Amino acid sequence: MHFADTLVARMRELGHPLCAGLDPHRDLLPPLFRRGSMAARDPETTAAVEEFLLAVLDRLEGRVAAVKPQIAFFEALGARGFAALERVAARARERNLAVVLDAKRGDIGSTADAYAHAYLEPGAACEVDALTLSPYLGLDSLRPFADRALRYGRGLFVLAHTSNPGAADYQERNLEKGGPLYTAVAESLVPLCEELVGPDTGWSSLGIVSGATYPEPAARLRELLPRALFLVPGYGAQGGSADDAVRSFVPGPAGREGGLVNSSRGLLFPGEAQTAGSAAEWERAIDGAIERTTGELAEAIAR
Amino acid sequence: MHFADTLVARMRELGHPLCAGLDPHRDLLPPLFRRGSMAARDPETTAAVEEFLLAVLDRLEGRVAAVKPQIAFFEALGARGFAALERVAARARERNLAVVLDAKRGDIGSTADAYAHAYLEPGAACEVDALTLSPYLGLDSLRPFADRALRYGRGLFVLAHTSNPGAADYQERNLEKGGPLYTAVAESLVPLCEELVGPDTGWSSLGIVSGATYPEPAARLRELLPRALFLVPGYGAQGGSADDAVRSFVPGPAGREGGLVNSSRGLLFPGEAQTAGSAAEWERAIDGAIERTTGELAEAIAR
Image (cartoon, each protein chain N blue to C red):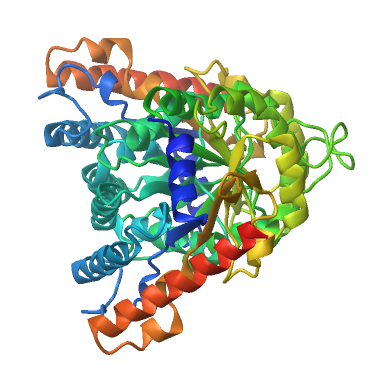
């Protein structure tokens, strides 16, 4: 098993690069699923969040290649939230949905090793297919993750250029030698990226995060990392268009390819779903949101 | 309550800046505490780790101002580990030990908000006094944490210059305008740091991480952030001396002050403790390690 090969094959089959972001803001949970106080420490809250996410997975199965749980929303529910994440991740993997855990971890060697053990080893309590990483601590902080990626066929997405306005604060600062910091991060990842290239597709399991809200940086990053899969946040709710989101994509056998485009709120909390009065109505609303989004992205990769 | 004021007052009372790092590598647990398979998913493992840490807190009470649990080692134990962290953090706070959770979190606004809610709000499942943060996403990613720090008197330590060799990869890269990246991070933190200055001591609850293994960068960071508390990893096992560790400290009413110096392995797993045959022998070994370390740091701040 090779993360990038498997994922790319699945995306070609489905004909779009949508990744469903699982960001269970408890305040946004639709009335149909709400119960109890909805306070973070109320066990009913975590149960409601889990039930909601499992229902979402039922809608996503067979329609998207990957889901991206944002761990912060589970941590906000404490140990119970963490247990819910373990079950949601396991269910997604059973349903042939690759799980990209958005955790943006990064620490020195021995600590990074503990994180890599926590998420990337077979049999880990919260076993996932790929993990997002923050590069601030340098290349040695990425090594324990890269080792697991190689050994167990996992994927990694290192932050290069994020989707938020604060990306300008440090990521876009120009270095004395070379361009902006985000390009230096990308350049330094080339050897790791080569190490993790898949035999079938030529895509690497060492990917980067490149926000849809910054299409020019995305194009520049593609030049530096021609084999990296890009995890693209910022499409939809954050303002990036479908064309912006696939700016870094290149021609492939089934349309342009080269990454995962994430949508969270637009899929999980579309307006019609928030006012649904029955499970069937809610399901139709989510199905509609999935169809609209995958359709829009399928068109974008065909252009 | 103000994090920096309270912490500095306590460190002056105790006469040293030691912070006890709680990094429960399960492979290093002394034989006295080991039980079962010690595999990550075995519930006995988490029980053993928790029992060990609670015994360590008994030794630390009244002797150090702060403890720094490294969340990665708890995450490696899954949801059970997370529950153990909640109990360890609560116990530490009951014992008048400030809890600095080493999580190096950092994400875009709405996600950062979930993290801040998870750790910095009163009544959070895993309520702590301070949190470490990674700055790669920029200043907007720090704002939700700063808001809680202001509102609830919490502390923040933003990574500036870490203790590992990889610090050279990005943190030390020179910018076209201004010095290396870590100084640009520090400069950009000045307004937040001013916002969080304490009325009693003049120290700010917005601190930074500055490794003991890089004393010159520490001195430079002190010039840029005269009111920031420095959380100093890398002392002891990683090779930084006591004098290196307090390089950024400045004269105060009870010796030099200006931060917390962390020691993890040297305190939790000293050689004598690893071979202890009884609880009393283990306690003496840990007490000895605490005395040696606090003594060494007390001497360093007196020089």
